[in-house]
Length: 313
Image (cartoon, rainbow, N blue to C red; front, side, top):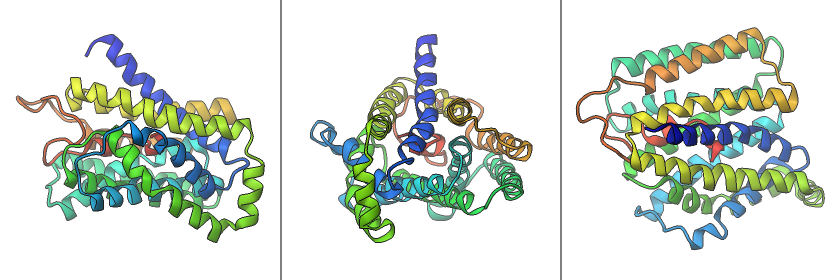
């Protein structure tokens, strides 16, 4: 990979990491489920008229959308609305890689390597340290909701793995079609019509900028560049860059909101990322680095599993 391609990969991770700050800004005035519905309307329209539908069954497309987009993002948005810091959210969501390893073993009978199992164990220890550090200073509910979002994303990863090779951009746009109506219905039931009306009336330039960033930059531009890199270079050369997402996320949150993790949260984050790195990184072997896009070879993490920050999309 040439320096300019590495720079593009780093640019995407910076966009995805900063996406958590953009989400947080949008949630200042808009209820989370309503904001999620608006975001995916912008993601899908007009892109759905220009991006080809992925060659998978409608049922699989809907299920992937339910878990990767609706489940993951609704839980993330709710957790951040409840007070989960954006930088820490970008870090904890990395647990989806570890959950994907476990679910792929149970569901798809993909036997994890010793390295992956060790990564799961180290990552789980990191999550426990974060929970302890978080519990000493703040309620644990927002943290638990983000972890549930990571679980939802991991289920979607396994569904994507089962569906076969697909373009991430196509999947983002077409699976996103299942989000707006259910999110709007949940907003009506959970947040209430009065909160929805107040949110829409308060939809100013900050909410519009946040929506544009999350929909266009993070989802469409980010995935367009990322999948181009995946089509030209080995998956093992591209996906490790995704571990920079929480680094950029925490730096962006520190700049925007003066977010400072506690010592235990920081220690747990380092351990969690070490577990993710152990699960994702692997020694190169002959024939293992053939260029691929979308889903990797059987027994390996799918591309979405190796990415951080779905909210990045």
